[in-house]
Figure (cartoon, one colour):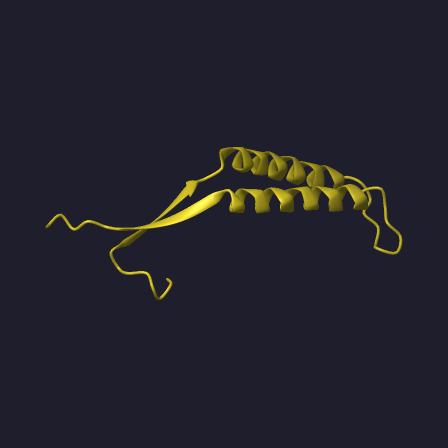
Length: 86
């Protein structure tokens, strides 16, 4: 827990940009699916790449881009929790 967070604070995560959030989820889904599908081909090594190496790397990059979009579309807000007494 961060030092400046108080015991009564509530952290709330919300979506500040729905289009980026949805696009990020779609990129993540298809990137993982593409990388998983590439594992059924021979991978090879860096010096002698097989037919599955390039699609696997592209799928991983697409999934990474999706993660970046999802994280950037979220916002974190901190609110003080009310105690019920005024």
